[in-house]
Length: 141
Image (cartoon, rainbow, N blue to C red; front, side, top):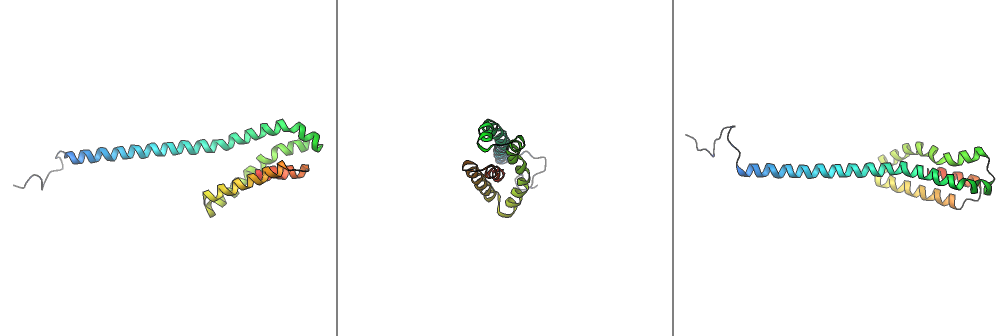
């Protein structure tokens, strides 16, 4: 009694347009999921880079420890403090970094961290005493 295109039952087969639209939607979802997976891998790689750099820093300082100890006349305790300062200050620095990121944004937080790291490295480069060197490592941390 009713024309088929006006009133159809829920069991009616989907039209070709419906099938094509569904296939296009699924392809878009797959692309979105691949983009999210790529971003997740990139973020995880960058996050793990900081741990690698801390280990690299310990290795570099280990190699420079003997010349530093003869130049500044360091005791064993001072050498231990010199090596551990950057890592010891890095932990509380994470709380400061989260505050900066929440208040001014992640991009600004990264900029602040990069500037602090640069200032710390400049202090270590031009250190004239043991205290200046440790201060540079603390700021870099």
